[in-house]
Amino acid sequence: MDFPITPILDDFNRANEGPPPSSNWIESFFTGGLKVSSNALVLNVPDTDDAITWHEPFGPDQEAYFRMLSFWLITDPLPGSVALRLRQQVIDDSETDHYSLDITPDTVFGEFKVEIWKLVGVTYTMLSQVLEVVLVVGDQLGVRIRGNVIKGYLNGVEIITATDSSIPSGQYISIVNGKAENVILDDFGGGEIPLDTTPRNTQTNLRWR
Image (cartoon, rainbow, N blue to C red; front, side, top):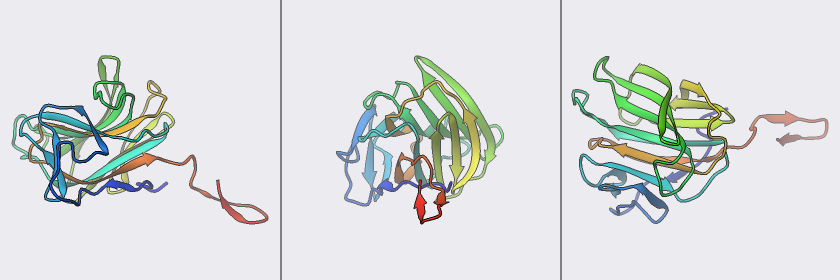
């Protein structure tokens, strides 16, 4: 299955707005907020932790993605991180159960590291990690969960995977920016993915299952 197959939900192409970036977003963790500036998504206040959740709930098979227009300073000893969350159980609480794809500069090995995490109750657990990921301006990063399988993508190519069954139900997708003040994001998309997009040829016609 190609990635992504869901539409862009917010391209941020409008006058400066926020926080939050529009009425379609709910602040699920707020210390300074996220806002639209110059047709992209940025931190409103430097060195703050903020999360925004898309207003619409989705079924359990989900994906989410964004494009990165600007990066951290790779030499920053405390660079912060950005993340995409799936199956977030409560719309206005970023500390509720969820899965996430986290992107952070790797200050030990250089380049970037990409990780899959889960939060269940009050316990964060890393499920998978890949190091020395090369990112350039304009790259699209995304995550998909289907059943118990979670996969992360860079420009549509799978780069990381994990399996977990702790959070079976759907709900919300969200963006997190944790003190990554130099990061600029764009073209957020996602939603529920269909059960199967493979064409099936019958004796009478061609139909989609």
